Image 1 (tube, rainbow, N blue to C red):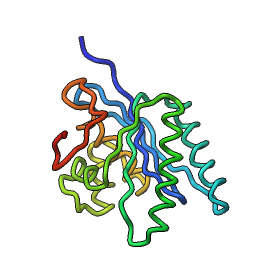
Image 2 (image 1 turned 90 degrees about the vertical axis):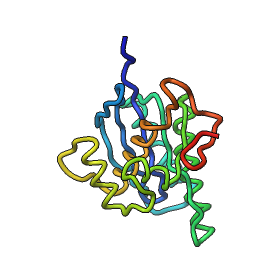
Image 3 (image 1 turned 30 degrees about the vertical axis):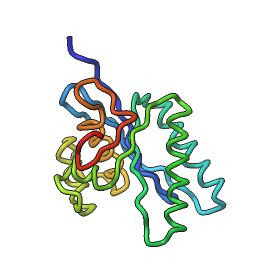
Image 4 (image 1 turned 180 degrees about the vertical axis):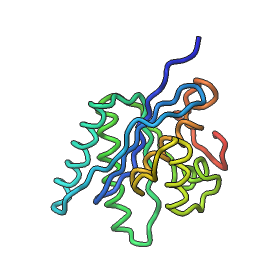
Length: 177
């Protein structure tokens, strides 16, 4: 008896634009569900984080994902930017865990490797491959494409071997450790 489809929400956090993408994984088949962006207005940080939290709560309520994948923060040249991005990630993760959803985290390198085949891929290459993998009529916006790529990465490797959970493990050089 085949397993039921699993709905995965991918999130590309950002303080100006937080991308989201939803896919269904049914066996090895991936299907596009929805994607877009939560646009965050300029203002005080707490209000901006609330916009991210509220926007993702609405998306979770509407589409009912079963799993969430979030892009990890990379250490930027500017430490202040890295800290602010980390807070946006925190709001995104809180939106998921408040709904009792499991959250997996992937680096940009892992996501690009899973979708394009190499970790140094440009944004337009990620957009193009997301379009091809999900049979979309056009390229999604860069932020939505990154979120969809995160969901695809999770669908390809984040669920472990078969139905084995990978929570509590780390990935090093493409292997669970």
